[in-house]
Length: 283
Length: 283
Image (cartoon, rainbow over all chains, first blue to last red; front, side, top):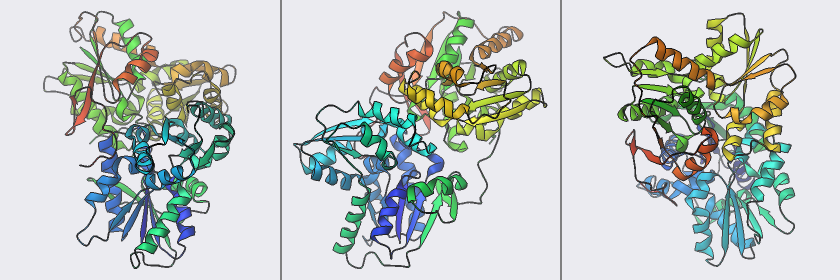
């Protein structure tokens, strides 16, 4: 079983590409939308949440987890890979930033722009990963904290989206030839981003390439990914009804029944469908 | 000493009104901008953060804390008041939602609208507090998650702001006669909000009234608030330089030197001016 973990809905876009590439495999998606966005959070909190999510996916039976959230991939992938390399060496955590960096280096003529959350930009990981592949490439990052929130509202095709995108794109320096979408929400803003971008600038979404890389990994590690029946199980924190409603836009297909999970004593546990408590909370 | 606690910058607007009303008193402001926004977070996390902040302000020497964040006021004020009622009964925690409800009831002709964060709306506290004062008043809440982020970008006077405000205002039902700003960021959007609002709808900001209520409380509790020299000390989590830069817009005055604090073993401790670690974090 393949686990896909994201801070919210965005990873469903990555999941769509993974399922198209590996249609016979079973997937478990964990969306931490109750605690999203991660982009403005401190590093310790992001690592805590990521550990809880990976542990939940291990308990669900996953033997590989794709971290579909760029913020977690940029800040905590190495930590997760070290912590959850089990005794048999078979459990595996993969991210989205390294494939994204490969894609950017493959396309650029020398100057890559990155649009991402504030936490992702502050990590400097895009620059580091691109420079591992080609130290001569210039990397210019722009933090775009509003864009994920605009997509969560469903306002991709609106003056809000177009003006915010234009303001962030204007912060990219001249000479950028390839812009990589460093947040899984941004592919839904592709029309607005392409419209705001100067002529000749290529905009690339890492998601399809993440799927290509996983297929390639499976080919190089025969027997590690067992085919199943193409099933999909979806878990989420926060509002399950909102997840079903909004998630379909990212998955490009209806969301199956959602299993609600919530933090309980430092773990993400299955819970009843009860909502967050209303009013004043005393503990 | 009077502590003022907010999840970020917004409470600086409340602080400005408090200082104007009590110019001889000393204030300590704690902005948790490193972990803002609170609006989308689960209740347990909000209570944890609020406890850490109140405990830090107690350690700074505060004998009263004004919770200037509507999200915390709506979800956790009762919890904080119970937990930090000390043996001598003198330490005091006050919020902003009850004054806001009083103000709304004072002005409405029967139907109050509330613009607020998702967490504040979900708490139902505005409705509860307004109904304690007048059960006949109808209350219609709209969650406006983008607005605080727009203000944090400094884009109050932009198509982004005007279109987002118009979209949220359009979600208020007909018949609303008074709209209360249920988040301390929103006063900076007052021109956009007034422009989007139908004629005859009154928009009210609770902040000046919160200051009036504190002055009134001090009058009814003589000897509890000792005058000082009008000093201001500012503590914040997250990026101190950004806090100085953006905070001035909310305070309406330059921000004095900021004392950086950070979560360390479950407490908000003073820390060096070091920023958040870059790159992959392994722990």
